[in-house]
Image (cartoon, rainbow, N blue to C red):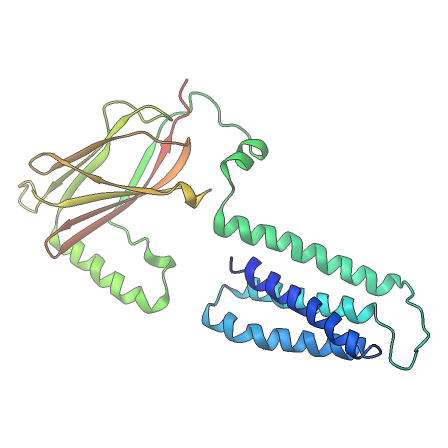
Length: 268
C-alpha cells in the first residue's frame, strides 16, 4: 500500500493533467511535463515524510513520477517545431526501459519483503519441504526481540527486560505429547513458577505465532489454565516449516515475555 497507492495516484494524475493542459496549450508539452513532474514530487513529499515508508519506497515513487513526466515530455515536440514529427531515439528509450525494469524489480522485492509470498505462489515457486522433516523447537529464553522497534523505545524495553530477570520467574514451555505436524492437533504447554518454585496461578498466557514468509498467517492464542501454574492448549498448525513464537505472561502488573522458534513437520 505504501508503494502502490501513492505511485498509482501520482502517475495517473500526471498523465491526466498533462493531456488536459496540453489540449489547452498544444505546443507546451515539454514544459508542462517538467512542471507536473516537479509538482508531483512536491505533493508527495509531505505524505512521504509523515507516513515514512522507507528510503527504498520513496526513491521508487519519485522515480516513477520522473519517468512518467520524462516520457510525456519526450513524445511532445518543442514549441518552435510546430510541424515537427515525433522521432524515435534509442538513447532516451534505453534509459526509460532500464529505469522501468529497475523500478519494477525493486517494487516486487519491497512488496515481498513487507507482505510476504502468498501460499499459492510459495507452492508454485518454492521447493517443497522434504517429508518426515525432523521437528525441532528452539527457545533462547528471556531475550528482547524489540531490537527492530524504533530507537526511542529501546531503553523502555531494556528496563522491562531487567525487571523480568529480577523477578526470577521460572517458565517451562514447549510442545507436549505429540510432535507438531501440519493438520494434526498438538498441545503446547507453559508452566510458570515464581522464584521459590511455587506455581503462579491466574495469569494470562498468550502465544503469538508469526510466519516469517507470510505475515497473513500470524495468529495468537490464549492458553487456559489446566492446573495450578500450568497453561495448555491443543493447536493445529496450518503450514510446515519455521515459525517465530512469542510467549507473553501477564499477572497483575507483572509481565514476562519469551521468544523462540519452532519447526512444524510436514507429516505423512
